Amino acid sequence: MTGLPAPLADSLELAHTISGAVLETLTLAIELVCAGVIALAVFSGVAELARARLVRADRPPPLSSVAGERVGHRLLFALELLVAADIIDTMRQPSFEQLATLAGVSAIRIATGIALTRELRPRHAASAPEAPAEPTQ
Image 1: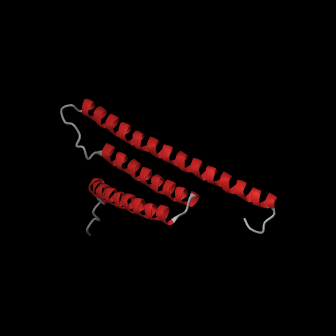
Image 2 (image 1 turned 90 degrees about the vertical axis):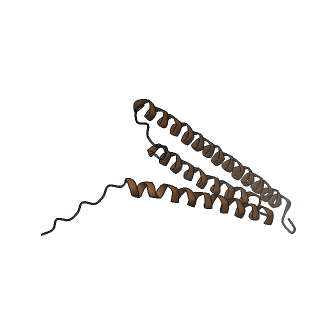
Image 3 (image 1 turned 180 degrees about the horizontal axis):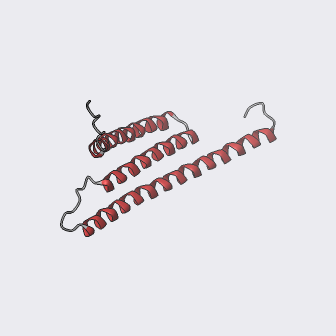
């Protein structure tokens, strides 16, 4: 850094290095949590579906059951976490290439999230109890 005393320049360089390491660790932690959420979603969905098929062997539940909705909501949460991790990673090393990659990956993940939300929405509307009809006088 030009014009700064050596101790101040060294302190700024150290702060930059530490903040980069903190952001990198935070990104890794979020990605690990995301991997855990995805694994939990898949394993719990499979276990719930298997349990439901064992309990009701004569009439197995459809694949678009509550287990599928839970998996879908957990996957949406994981997608949101991945977008957050990408944003933090871009803060660590901002460049036009990194920003372009972030924009592309975020757009794909957001589009996937929207599609998954639309897929889950009709199930809620169909499974919601109907409002009782008002009595006529």
